[in-house]
Image (cartoon, rainbow, N blue to C red; front, side, top):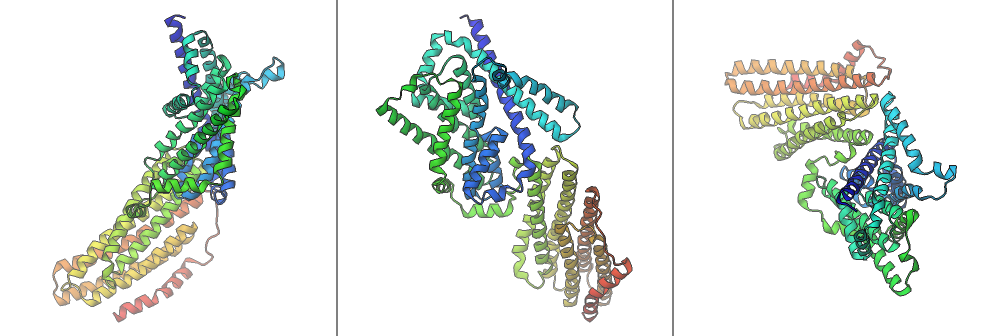
Length: 589
């Protein structure tokens, strides 16, 4: 065989591999996006029982045709706090079993017979038709769901075309003695295992390695002795994908990636040790027989059934091993307090899950800001909470930045009308709560300065500021409650509350300025007081911003909820009565 012919074989082999990987990635991403919307209601339920989680992981992986996708998703779910780290092992073991479905699909090309039915069921025959259908759906359909289905069909067709191209490319290699010698060396369990492990790490896919093994099996002929270590090594090497995805994750995310690695090591190495020990004693006759196209998925399935049967009941051992590798430290606890681990980038492929986590994050931000404002506003009564208030201010600012970045990434995805409306509401809520956090930070500095300038502020000044602060807290609590309940008609109530708070603030400012002129105080003290009042009024403005966002969200969702039957005038009277004690307390101050 000439050098040119060898180069052509290499080019065809690499081209087939590229098509195989591209098709698998396209199909996996499309199928994952189709199943993503229904996962948010199932994840929490199935992970409560490891056997149920095992079945769910197996079915999900069989559907998306990628164990790497499922394990990366599991890393993301654990990192985001959606499922507990100790409950992830069932999903991982199930994903490893579910990935055998790919090898079974590829093995259909090995079915013998030239009858019409046998020919039609071969992927090499029907995949071009699926490709044409997929192209038509992605190009001409206006429905996002149909486009996704078309993309999945096109990905499957490309994957099968790549598989056929690899099979055709390697067929002439059986005439080269050197290739046969190399394949014979791979029958050595250690060499075959290490080679497949390294190659799977390079292409980040065990399915690709097994696909190549099947291509060689169909074109050249590979024995069971060669195939077994290659299949085992590929399953360990593909763990690199989840390990890479966990690099930017929390320690729990890293521990989840280690679960996948440890499980595959404990699954494949004992299997090989036991199998080859039995072979040394019993001398299995099939070891030198051609594995064929069907033998590959049989071996792949046997290895994973062995691992599932042994390690699913003993999954606690793998969990403890991962926990020992990365123990929980005090520093990690502090970092977790200031980091929204629920906002994991691995979930962005499924906007439904990502939005649910973003909603949880914004709710946590609102709780943190509410706690911050309560601590800051009442520092006059509890000055010992100065340090706690500073920590809460910094935490709310960091939360807002993380949520904003995550929402931008979600917005870049293809979203439906409902999801787009949800993104708009979450963005408005994050902006308003974030600005409240910034106001709290400014108030913290001003109130600290107020406490230190005892000669500028009287006890009456401080008492009146606290009265206004308590009134504002009522508005804030009402706003936060309405946001969490998605109550659009809360806007009228907030506006009535705002009128009362503004009236209180005007009275306080006028009374303060009168006292300043009567007492002849310095201008710096009066400026600090009015700055605090204006900052508190800003908080009320942001409450109104959230109320408006709730109305827009309700309108964009096409919902028409019945508003409050009480008239505006009646509502104002009711709220005024609620605030009567504030005005009376102000008069007594």
